[in-house]
Image (cartoon, rainbow, N blue to C red; front, side, top):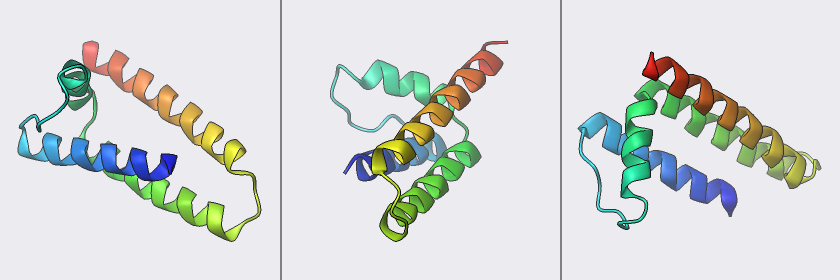
Length: 90
């Protein structure tokens, strides 16, 4: 379920970055989404979407606990986002 939610979020973000327009969002998240549009490039979003697909397949095929795989993915995603936000500021 979490993977699908992330997939939907990054697909919306990709569409917004490519089109250059902010989609209709709940007013509380609109500012954060706008910041994400400035941080993420379309090729980076595509890489995350690809990794989410791999992660979903890995959860189905292997017997690894979902919590471990999701924690690893989340940590890598947060680090990547942090590095990109620092890079875009400079």
